[in-house]
Picture 1 (spheres, rainbow, N blue to C red):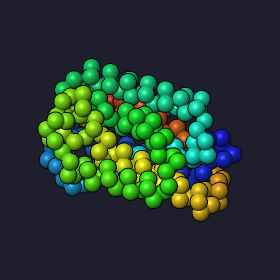
Picture 2: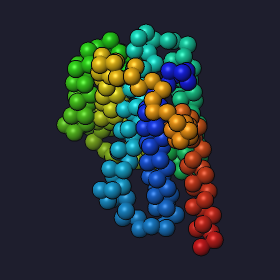
Picture 3: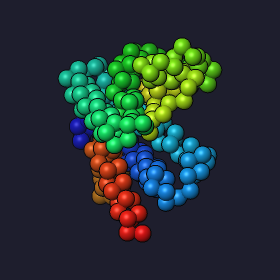
Length: 240
């Protein structure tokens, strides 16, 4: 969005999600290098940390989709953003396939945001209550509709396979498209109540601008933070 129409509160929420993501990946890297006990991966803290961060990013993605295109789809802007995210997702797949082929990322958060941005367009004209109900359906289905027929590798992105996915990052349609739909529903409610119009440019101040900057460049930070973290953890493990 243009700077004059941005909502700093949403940028701050993205910054908070980024901090949560960096913290989670830092703990993941410590696990990989054996610097913390491996059984930490099976704790509720590790489990919910990952899901809260992913859910926040996807909800904000749905909210951003509504704020950018709810009044009418701006196709050039949409396709530019889609191309950047899809290209970055492909880069992540290639890099992780080379680095750790047994656990490479074939449908991670960037793949999900790219696909769900397309699917989310279908929900832009639905009433907010219908969109919220659909979000609940995707969450419900992720617990109750698993089937062996979706175990095929090419269908794993649906999220209803019986076999667990062996990958470092996985946000399948069930339940995670539900988070995007929830964000779209939230966007619609905010527009109907005039909330977003009241929040444009607010809050203000130097520290708000500084704290908002990461949220305005979340894709760049996503791409560079993990190589930096892994490099630092590897260096520490060698020195120690």
